[in-house]
Length: 291
Image 1 (cartoon, rainbow, N blue to C red):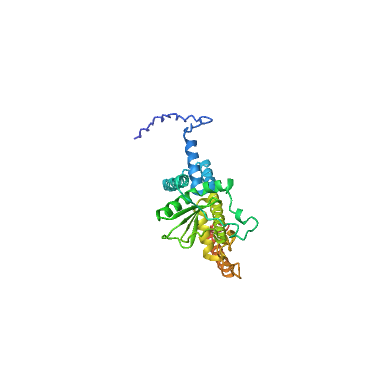
Image 2 (image 1 turned 45 degrees about the horizontal axis):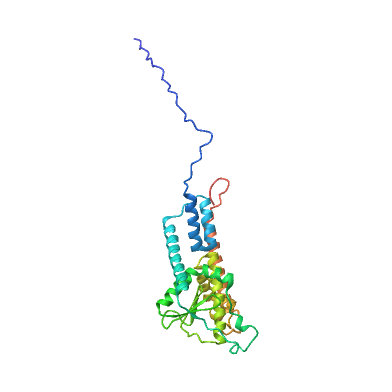
């Protein structure tokens, strides 16, 4: 008995259609307002982070990186607060009735050659310094006036606020505003030298604010003060120890501060080395087995 052969029909081949890929994709139109938003973002980063902040923001924008919502909220909030304080400082300076800062007379200063002219018009740098320090100065001025302090306008572009109560002891410079609980004695060389000392602190505020934002100088000052307190502080030394009422120490600079700073540097270096060692991928031999 023969078995009939099974016949199968040939499969039908369906040709597959390949998508047509153009040689060059058309450029995606960029929204017209994107550059405007980028510039506004750079300005906000400049206000909050100085030149360093605007450089980082520009690099991130050029690489197409989109900042997170939290970062945008923090930067915009800080920008708005600083602009409000800057405007308040400008309005208070234009409409407020300030007393003239005491200046030493020729007789009080010993009739020296030019001591009475050391505190002069701040000039172009004074205007630039006041503009850069305006947010910090505005916040300090609002606080001092809120405490009922007496406001004195000095010829070198700084402002002194004398308060009976407050968190400030002796005196602290904020931007171009000097908050103090000490009375401004009239026509004394001591007041004249103190005004010059605080003006140099205002220069430090402006320089670091322009470079890395308004929080840079107080952070660096606090760090320096932790290792080199009082008269050992490098910022105080640059502003003038004698003018600020400090006594020059005999063992300046501080040996203890240098040792503490060196120890901190060694500790940070050791942490980086250990971290790099544990992050390094394992070295594999020729067989591919890690060892």
